[in-house]
Length: 256
Length: 261
Image 1 (cartoon, rainbow over the protein chains, first blue to last red):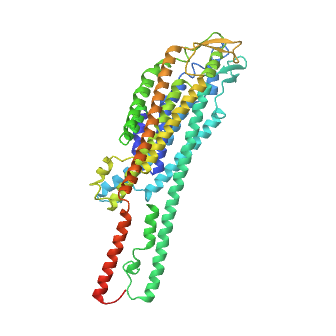
Image 2 (image 1 turned 90 degrees about the vertical axis):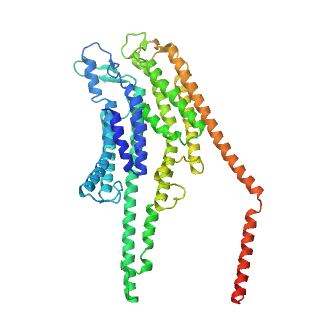
Image 3 (image 1 turned 135 degrees about the vertical axis):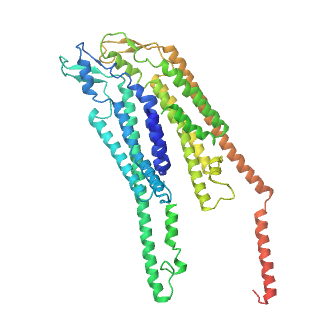
């Protein structure tokens, strides 16, 4: 079990995503997962060994390190990556559920298993909202835990068993600050992509509903006119010439 | 997730690249990624452990190391390779979008004479023309910009590409000007120069590819204007012929029906 497992799981999500969803996946894979594995992990490798306090009192360094770094930034980064990637699996589960239903009933129940309509649209929307929630949550947690996004080179510590206020020095504070800023920027980029995708999905649905309603009222009003003037009505209640309603082709053009 | 995955991503773009692009991908993965993973990471592995300052003052070593190496060479190279490889994904996305549109048209029944089935569309090699030419050219341009920027950042951060064996450090909490010694400075200098040379070669390949693409477009345009020159009034002749044909058919009709126009 390693990051490859997460990568393989997420590659499956790619099939059922929108265009923006695929860009989001590419950003997560390349600018977050890959950078974490090839660079960031190594920066924090020796963080406790190289954490030095200006005191010989045994236990003082351990207590101070634990106080300033309750959870290592790199571990928080890893947790964030996992939590942010997993809501996408809801979509894969829903598609698998649809497949199972079709198999059970032994007939085609859906136009296409991966098509984003009905329940799958709601699942996708929920996964987007949960992803965004996790991103914002982790950024806020990072900010609160470490008093900002920078790592100071010097910290003053006076916890027991340290006999007085002692200077403690972190290792590689500038490099760590650069990588944390990188993490924050990519997180914000992913949040923006999620918002764009959310707006795009909601707008698309609203336009579709509006045009469907519009074409229904058009057909109803035409049918009334038609009843006054003609004896026969077409099968759908509209004259044969207007059955291929302009609004249907407008919807197709908009949604294509 | 490692360099192998990046190789898979970029390898997919290889099919639609020019020959210079294919050489570039090979240079990137053999002379830069592989060297980084199998050699450079070992050389820089113990960089902070073996960074020694001539003082017992706690914290002095940490502060001096942080001052002289704000970002490690290895991390900067890893970031450079990631940034330089990602513009190729623009091309991959464009090709995927083009294929998606072609498949949609095929399902509607529009391009049945060009392709046998959907598999044929997936296997087709997409030519670098039209909007794909612009995407490809932009990706090469961004690659050049990223390479140059990282080389400049390297030069600026480390005052050149040579690592000295001793550094003088007088930052608080160091009590005075202290001698600090880097581990393996010569080996690190050798690898730095190697990676910088590979960077320069990649940049030259990108410039050559951009020039090649521009020349191809100019050559194609000049060929088009030449064919138009060889058949100068071709379009004019056609429209005149059409007018004549219409006049003949109208006069013919009038003769048959007996009504003047």
